[in-house]
Image (cartoon, rainbow, N blue to C red; front, side, top):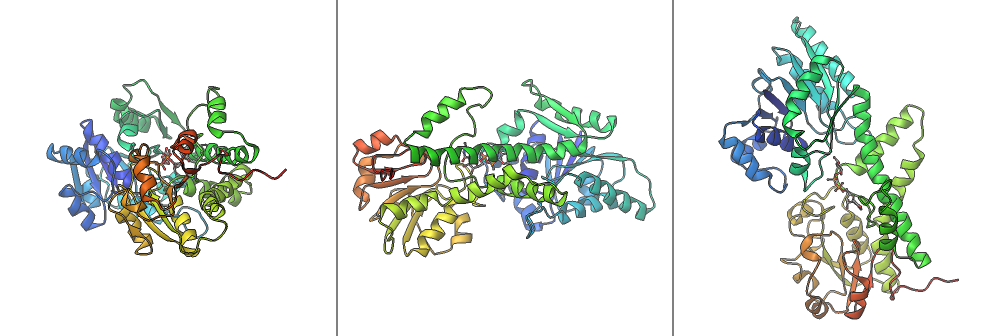
Length: 447
Ligand code: UDX
């Protein structure tokens, strides 16, 4: 089989490379000449563990190619994936101009039957718009070429995208013809060896599935954050509550970890977009509205704890921050809680010294020199009044607390990810503040 993937961002690049990895002939297309030149030399626009080697391997094997020419890329392709960006507009809805421009371009250049698949997360109804663009482009050329559109949402987690692609829990494909279903079955066959299903459905349902999945996961997180905040007030331990509820298979153990709010490129955007789509169609997503406002508030929780601990006056305090990316194993800073926390700290007159194993260059784009960037996690603590753990990178899990204690001016830790044991921290002499557990250093609740 031969496929084309249009858009070499995160989704497109992972998709194209993983298809090449199983032996399919793949051409990745992007309008950005620099990006394509870099990719040809094995330089990637994003950080994703394992991807660089996989790209090089498949390029060397001749199965993975990069071009800026849409006409060349889609030539003889059985399937063309549209994986370009859908940036949120002012009002929160996904901007489809890139998706539709690609659809038009495919219509202008296609020569044979093909399945045109939307891979970007797009609102319900987009595949129908893609079809219209294609039809209009073909009509303009005065040719009749048979084609199908399909919707194939991705469920990749940053940092684990290759594994998620090669061993998916499920593949969801929305189709409207048997022919398209056959093509997509054949394409995905190599990924179904672990027995997980490919679920075919109508196109609007596939489009909705992606939003429903991300919104459900965001809901679990916001719900748990709400419970965590209440646990603190009531003197319960959210870790215990999490284990207690998670062992009920109907609830499950995943995505119920409280923290400082979800970030990244998907959850915030998709929750907003679904609320918006519903509103446009006369329906109010009440649960999701609450999910969003709980998340906004949760991003400030760690800052509130810092302010309270220091008696409301943070002027002149220096804070050491571990972790900037929205989660470990990525350099993605989009909607990262660190940005909210740092902005609030700076506004109070603090100085911030931060360390992140991967995301510092990316963070500099937004934060510039408003903070200092340490060369390692310990340098960030020199003369700091406290440590804030903002992203749970593995290397932060078990530091020498003796060293941490000596470097800090005061033995104070604010842990936004609950990675340390409150009892051990107390024994080591730290004032330890985390999420959803009233530690010995919290103020007692007024009765
Ligand atoms: C997510 C979805 O998981 C993926 O299926 C979809 O395709 C894209 O969006 P991603 O954004 O890479 O993937 O990150 P994920 O690992 O899902 O984490 C999202 C956010 O939730 C992070 O900010 C993380 O810190 C937070 N989170 C996750 C929690 O706060 N608690 C949890 O229990 C789990």
